[in-house]
Length: 190
Image 1 (tube, rainbow, N blue to C red):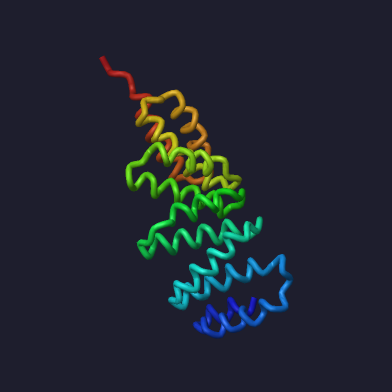
Image 2 (cartoon, rainbow, N blue to C red):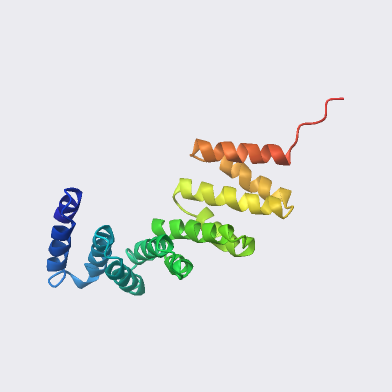
């Protein structure tokens, strides 16, 4: 896309003008994708009010391909600005089963964990653990296993950690191995 070339060349204003000029004649089914791209450009240009507005419109559209992207981008922007409602944006994004929706689940869970609301973190972690993206699923699973361990549910944690250890990301697998070792301490040498 020519707008990406303009943006990468540092001409964000030119990219915004180009995308805005395409919207009127664009296929209505794909306008939401342009809104998300335009919001990203406005965000890059530091025009956060306009970016939030466009992300919100794209999220409200419930477009199956773009709404989750908009929800996660909006949540990330709200988080970065210290504004409320980031969690609401991630929650809304999770209504869609796209890659972005699962990332939104991880972000929502992280916000819950940051404020020590472990019960609220469970649902988005369970959601993330079902992702088709093995890395996202593995991360969601290891975090959920840690919550189970904290609750004293060693059996449930063990089942999840065995999946984590077999996952694609070696660092997350290593964390899973360490947590499994905590569940199975070595026998005392007598």
